[in-house]
Picture 1 (cartoon, rainbow, N blue to C red):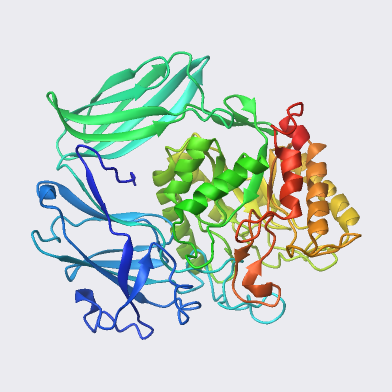
Picture 2 (picture 1 turned 90 degrees about the horizontal axis):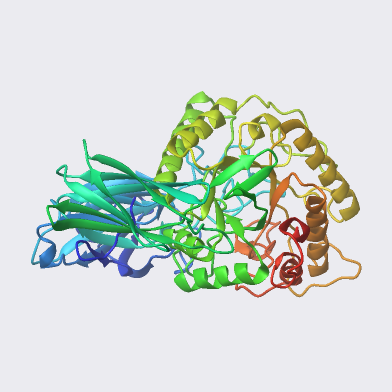
Length: 605
C-alpha cells in the first residue's frame, strides 16, 4: 500500500493518458480474445469515470475493457516490476501480454501485482484491464436491492441504495513502478507524547534478504536516527524527539522520515514519509488532539465534478482545500468511500482533520445470514485495505466503518414517528468491524454515521457517536422551530444515554442557487442559512457536541429521481462548480478564526 516513489533506488512510470476502451454488454470480451487487444476501441481518458465522457456510457455499469501499450525502461531489468491501480470501481481483472495477472473487488482503494515475470524487454507490452460496476445486493455498497428504490418518491435510476452517482471506471492513476530485489514493503508509524517529548514508533517490513536498515527523522532540533535489525522480514525501533513540534490544525508541521535498507555502506532501497507527531484520544464528551479539546467544523463531501466524475482531479483538490480554509473548516468526512491518496496528502500539509470512511453505505440486514456475511467479509477487507493505505497520515484522526446502515423498519414517518425496529440485528456485524479496526490501529477512534432512528445499540459500540439528522428537511420540512426543538431533545437524550462525544455528521437543506424568499421557505438560500443556524446554535449550548459537518460541501451528481432535480443533490453550500451560496458566507462568519479572533472553537459552532 505504500504510494510509489521516484528516487535514486526506485522508479515509476505513470500510465495515465488516453487508453483504448470498449464496452462489453454481453460479457463476451474474454471469449473474443480481448486480453490480447481490443477489436473496435475508442479513446478514453484515464484517470476518470467513463460515464460522462460519451453519450452512451452515462448509465452504463456493466463490463468495459481498457488497454494500453507501454515499454519497460531497460534500466529496470534487474529490479522487481509492479503494476499498481489506484482505484477501479467496482471490480477489475488484469492481464499483461495476454497472461492473467490478478483481480480485485471493491472500488476506491489501490491494488498492485508483481508483473516482473509478465513483462517483456526491448519491445512493447500490453496491459488490459476489465472493469465493471454492476449494482448487486451483496456488494459493498449494495444496489438493486429488492423492495428498495422501487416506486414512490425514493425511486431512482440507476437503482442505487445510496444517494450519489455510481461512477465507474479507472478513477485514479495506473502506475508501473520498480523496486530493488530486496526492498521496503511497508512502513508503519505511530506517534505519542511523553510530556514535551515526541515518541515515534516505527515498524518496517522488507521483502527479500534480512538486510540491515536505518531510520532517520529530520526536522526541528536536528536528526534523530536508529538502526533497523530485521528478523523474519520485520524490524521495529522508537525515536524520541525532545521539545517536539506537534502537528495540529493551526501548525501542520511535518517531520521527514527516511527509511533505508543497507548492505554495508551501500544503500539498496530508500523510502521517505512525512510524519506528523500528534495524538488523538477520546476523553468523556471530548475529542482530544495533542491532549487538548478539538471541535470539528466542516463538511461531508464527495469526489465529484462534471465530465471527469470521480476521477482524480488535482486542480480541484487545490481549489477545494482553498475553500475549506477560506470558510474556516478544519475537517471533513470522506463520505462515503475512501478519497484519493492525493487528498490525504493535502490534508496532512494543510492541517485538515479527516474522518476516513469505507464504502459501506446502504447496508441492510433483511436478506439472510449468508448475504449479510458476504457483505461483512467485504467490509472487513475494505477496512483492512484502508488502514494499510492511510495509517501514516496525521490528518486522518478517525475511522468510519459505515454510513447510515439501516435495520428493518427504520424509516421515520412524515410526522417524525418511527415504527418499531429490530435493534438487535447488526450488533455482531458492527462489533466485528469495530474490533477489527481497533486491532489494526489502536491509535484512532472508530465511529459510524447513524441515520435518523438508527439503533442506539449500534451507536454504543463506537468511540464517537456520529449522527446524520435532517430535522427541518425530510422531517418537519419548513418548520424550523419545531425541527430545532426535536434536534435539541434528541441530542440531550443521546448524551444522557451514551455519555460519548457526539458529532452531527450530516445536516442540511437542498438549495437552488439564486432562489430567494422572505420569509425563508424550503429550497431558498435563506432557508438553508436559517436551518444551518439552528443546528449551530443547538451545538453551541451543548458541550458534549464535539463537531458539526454540514451536508454538503458542494452540490453533487446523483442517480435520476423525482426528488433530485437535474440529477443533483443540491445541499451544497457551494454549487457543483464551486460558486458560494449564502450559506458559505454565513459559515465563514461563524467558523473563521481570522475573522473572529476573540472567540473559541465552541463559540464559533
